[in-house]
Image 1 (tube, rainbow, N blue to C red):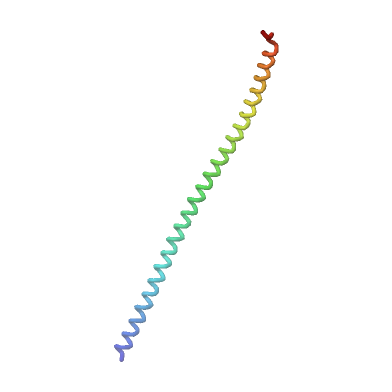
Image 2: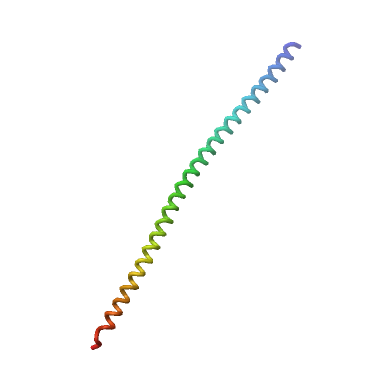
Length: 93
């Protein structure tokens, strides 16, 4: 009877140890997955910051181009007016 009780106790102990090992494995896997998610979030945050900087730079460039475009249009208007004035002062042949 002692052997049977001892064998049953050993089986229960082995089952409990197996359950603890399984839980430890799941916890370690969850921590690794959490670390992977944290790394991915950090990379996404870096990408977002980089893209925000690029967007700011592109917006600034677009603003400068718009200003230059207005200046060029004004100069072209002035040049066309000057040409019209010069042509209107020429006697017609």
